[in-house]
Length: 145
Length: 144
Image 1 (cartoon, rainbow over the protein chains, first blue to last red):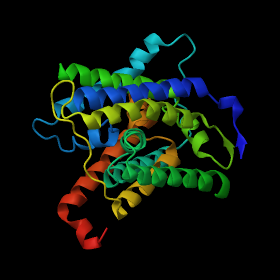
Image 2 (tube, rainbow over the protein chains, first blue to last red):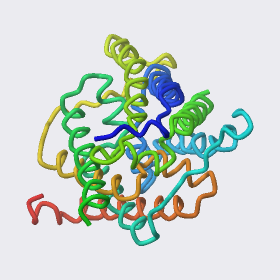
Image 3 (cartoon, rainbow over the protein chains, first blue to last red):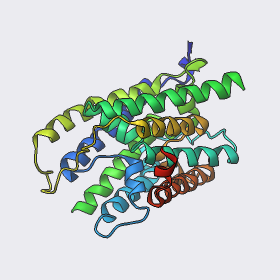
């Protein structure tokens, strides 16, 4: 293993992580909800009466983020996403992520951030599973194929 | 009041994803490339988030109501079963394939990235397939 110092952004990543933590903290304490993206989105398929409003409000907030970020961030700070995967790979990845997160009841936010924050053994197992599979997939794609 | 706070939390979470680097698939894949040139940044994302979340959930456990007076919807399941592990592995494989997990996919779609929109569309299809399979009893017959 070699460390990629050129792309290493400890301060931005730590600050962003703290924001994610603050949002998760706010959501459970103020709204009484666990901040898990796959669960929030999946609960709208289909929408249930009386249970859709909070999900839609949250997702609209997320959709507004790039606009607000562009207004707040200093000139030249905004990094456009670098997406190297082709369309076929993107579709396969989306299907796997959609199926897997619903089947395993959570993703990086619900299991990774909230689950580990509340020291849930169940979420630790899920997090180890998706991190392990993520490491393995990148290893295969970049170093085997 | 509720809708405003929920919108605000979604916005804050999206800003956190953008600042942290999670919305940049190349950076995510750099973190998942443990055996190549490894970018450890995203470990700092998790560390920062959990450092704050830990205290929030410790406080939430002691409360019976949210600050707005509603129910506290804390997960009740503690079961570690096959579907948790298979689901996690499936999600991780997809995450490692393109570098998107659900939140960053949605935020990048709002940034105007066509590929992120395709990712989100496929992810929604995956979620719908799950719902249909769940309802049809297909899983019970397959034993998964």
